Amino acid sequence: MEFLINPKFEDYLKSLSVEEDPVVLEMEKYAQEKDFPIIGREGGRFLYLLTRLKNPGLVVEIGSGFGYSAYWFAKGVKKGKVVLIDYQQRNIQTAKKFFKKAGLLDKTEFRAGDGVEIGKEYSNIDILFLDLEKVRYMEAIKTLEKNLSPDGMVIADNVLFQGKVIFEPENKKAKILNRFNRYMFENYFSIILPIRDGILIGIKKS
Picture 1 (cartoon, rainbow, N blue to C red):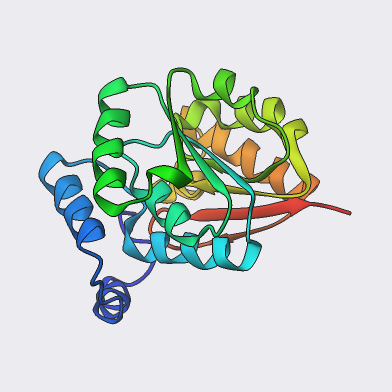
Picture 2: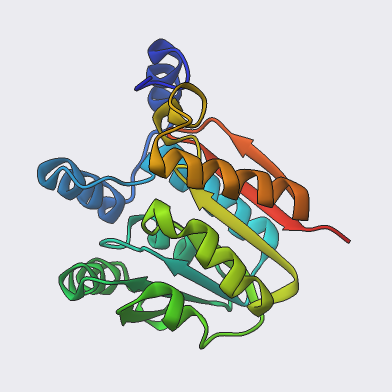
């Protein structure tokens, strides 16, 4: 259940994703050394493409960690802003160092604290990215969906939870993620891509 697709396919995709951005490489090295979970390069590239296509004015990310996924958002925005929120101040400080090195501080805002509560301070969110504690996904979407822009997009990471949503449906976190996934498909036009641990993308049904 560790791999959602054949490991050889993953190796092939990684071989295609040649990265020259020194900050991305440094962040990936940091994640590996600290055993810090990140969305991965394929996931990051996907977020960048979505951002370029969407051209958001405001991206709010809840559960930013040390800023790896937010970095891809910030690379993709043109005149927009990316808000990073994490409950640990040390993660936010580490993120600031990486973003300063990349010259992206002017595109970002850094907040430490409860992501759902802080998220309520923002309106007209064009992209809401959820990567907080999995047990809070339902709380997060039901609290913050009213803060989305009319054509706002929701992106959520880890929605397949290492396959446990299928193979261990009685697992506490798997139950909540299954509820979240069903909610997103019932109330949003959504799709789940089997990138790493599963990435969900949804927009409100018209």
